[in-house]
Image 1 (tube, protein in one colour):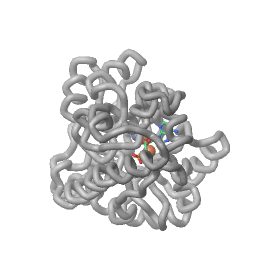
Image 2 (image 1 turned 90 degrees about the vertical axis):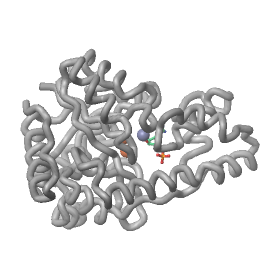
Image 3 (image 1 turned 180 degrees about the horizontal axis):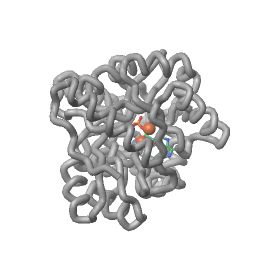
Length: 292
Ligand code: AMP
Ligand code: ZN
Ligand code: FE
Ligand code: FE
C-alpha cells in the first residue's frame, strides 16, 4: 500500500491539472494520493473523478497558510467540510491576501528593473484561486530573469529579495480549531522546514494537539534524516499521527517526485479515524474514503 498525502495541482501552484496529477500518481504506483492545494478545495472534484477512473483513492485536503508567533506554518487539513462557514471565511481572507499583494510585488520588481505585468502573471495563474509566488517565478523564468523556479525565488521572491511582500495568514491555533470543527484532521506540513522550525518544538506541538492537532508530516524533503528521527520521536511521545509525502508540484519543484516519501498504512488509518471522529462530533457527513 503506497500512500502519498501531500501534492499540488494547477488549482494552486502545481504545474498539472488535478486529474493529471491523479493519473501520474496511479502511474507512479500509488494507491492513495492526498491532493492538498494551497488555501483552496477547487481541485477536489476533478481529482476525485479522476481517481475513480484511475482506480486509486484521493484524500481531499487543503494546505492552509497559517502563522504561529510570527513564523509561517503550513497546516494540512484533510477531509474538512469545505462549506464550513468559519473555514470558508478564513480561506477567503487568505486568498484575498494572496491576490492583494500581487500589485505591490510587481511594483517592487519593476523598481528593481524587472519588466513583468499583471496580465502575464494571470496567464500563469489560469484557473487557480490561490495566486502564489511560483506563478510569478514562472513568468520570470519565461522572460529570462531566472533559470528555474528555485532560481527565481533566490534572486527575486524569497524573504529579503526585491519582490517579497508579506501577506495575510490565519492564526495556526485558531485554524487547528476551525479544521477540527469542520470535521477535518489537521496535520502540520513540513514542521521543521524553512520558517517554522524555530516555533514548533515539542511543547508547542503538544499545546496545538490540545486544540485538535492530529499529526505531523515527518518524511518530507525539507527534513534531514536527523530531523525525521527527532520528529518521529516527538510523534511517538505525543501520540501524534506521523505522515510522509512528496509535496509534488509537477515541474515546479525538483526532487519532489510523487511517492518519494510515503505514509505508513497504520498512520493513514489513524488519520482517517480522526477525521471520522471529528466529522461525527461536528455533525458533518462522515467522509467516504476507502480504507487500506
Ligand atoms: P507563496 O504561496 O506565494 O507564499 O509561495 C510559496 C510556494 O512557493 C510554496 O508552495 C513553495 O512550495 C514554493 N516555493 C518556495 N520556495 C521555492 C523554491 N525555492 N523553488 C520552488 N518552489 C518554491
Ligand atoms: Zn506550493
Ligand atoms: Fe508547504
Ligand atoms: Fe505543499
